Length: 386
Length: 98
Image (cartoon, each protein chain N blue to C red):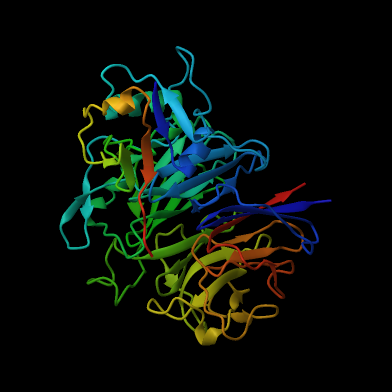
């Protein structure tokens, strides 16, 4: 019988939540990397027992961890032991160095500021090679490893896409979304907070901003600018890689031509501010968002936690409330904290800054908490296991 | 041998108990101790000093003999009590309020 493994990254460690395919009874692990901020934990699609986790702290920086046994044990790739002469140099797994001359981007005061690595926000393992992983980092850049995380190399072409104009928002200038076209691995989409969305068609050598149609009337001086839009999250269904969905700072957007042009599909949402967006595993026109009151009030409207589902690819939305708190709820759901499994009855998962992880085993019709009292949840991924 | 006391999280990363013993050469300096520590425990590379700049991370402190050595230059020669192992060098995660 199939089972699921939920990988929850929190402000104070990572947790692994497991269940059989019914998704009714859950086992919650003790914390992995207790005390560390876990911005993301994600497994390889081709080897689900290979899991990557970037742990970080304000004190001791960024550490890359890897498990080869489904999260039971972890080690730092290449950092396990003192190498013999001629072996791979130790301690490179945590080394994220921008390529070439370190250029500058726009700083909060409008001056130019050099790129400074802070942490990994998102890891995207390859669809075909368990040793190949992309990493999205703050200050915004894209790195890759081809040796299972032992060493990382930047794809600097991204920062040439008008990088001098990028400016961090309040949450930092992070690259948080990486989507590889499953039909063409040379095509990659990324999104950067307060810079926008970008696409490469040559495996990361060159990039172009794909922000036409986005409008940011109250966030940037030119609402139609080529870069500077605060994209919170993008999502794609693997069967239709040219259709992209986006939760922007404000506005839910859709593109039917791989980002060449976007149009708004916020429709009847109570507010179109929010962070995550995701697509049903079997219905490419069914999408999910969690509306948040505003950029000034990061909690659900009216204290009611509601996931909204559109079965029409946007514009027409229905509130999903069964099993979710409908009074006195003031949590947030962060950009990487929603995921879907691929069981026949598609499961939807999300985590909150209040420490709850919710599951719906029926495509969102009803919900229940898997766990209620974790540290603030930063990310949720799910693995569907045979 | 020089005794180095690591903070909780770095002990976990290096998989060691509270104190590690290092032969950091003569004279022993902050830099030679950190170089030796990172060679012996590669998992710690980048956690005490930034990978790119080799500068001490802002929230890491070096204490020894009741003195704060955090702002001393890399070539600073450690006190003889530390060099002889009579006193440890403490690597500390700085206090953070809130």
